[in-house]
Length: 430
Image (spheres, rainbow, N blue to C red):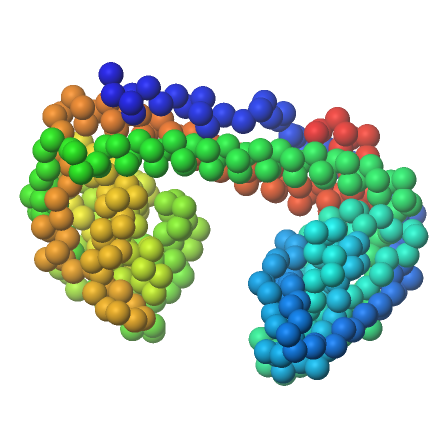
């Protein structure tokens, strides 16, 4: 038995996860049941410490992610290499926001590991009062309700240059529960976050196992290979079209199109926003039961050659000029090619073979047809496909559960703030 046949799916297991259910939302008896709305200025204050930028002095630079996702390290900076005379200093448990594009929710609480980092004056900092627990505020910064309030208050004429001033942030009114309630909310939401983190870890572990399998399947020691063009006689890119011919609604004479924006870097396909294009030639190649979809050209060379197995819902759809359809000889050939073309070794070959030294890289049909792919005996191909399909199913299930938990979390946060979900119900749910 080869090494890959001994790889167990248990390699990708994480500790047992509990099911998290959405607690039932109860109706409130009266408006008095909800926590009082208070301006943020009553529970935190603008508190900025500036530090001068000195030459030959190293500063650790930070940024703030959108949607309350936290602080990010941006490397080190010599004080003599910046145009700023001074920068703002971050302190643990402070709130920090980005004034620019504040409508995207760039606000969070500073973690302890970012204490002492610096940011530009686009990032005002605030110190929390004794009525607010920093971890509760951290969760509040991840609330779409707060982002919506921030968006409503931004000022400026150009969308990407609109700003939110500190005074405008402090005017936002939100429900502020007592500290003991904040602590219980933190415990509940942290429990859900722990489950999400476990699922993400499970997904990454399964992906590592899959990479090990694919690397072995496509090793240079493979006993037999075939040119891709012999296994996929038809490899063709999609058509181009004018913007005026594209619609988000299906109309008579229009053809459904799977665009490059529908293909995700994680290998999945998003069918929520398909395009519909009128006036495409009758000869336009469409996706069929033996088709694969591949990215032909992209500014990110690592995405060139990424391959996708289109679901039945898009059979009969076209692809854009940025993609190929590859029509295999039969379904079994398609399934095996979907396996080997995703291997890190072959993905690297395709990325490196794309023409163009800068900007968009382009994968040529002529080169692709000559690409030698492993082609073992039929029984070996069948076992390999089954092994990878099992891991694909595990990854898909973990991703679906992760998305479900994130939706649960969003509902919990909103419901716990306005008390349509009571604390005890939330405890029972998680």
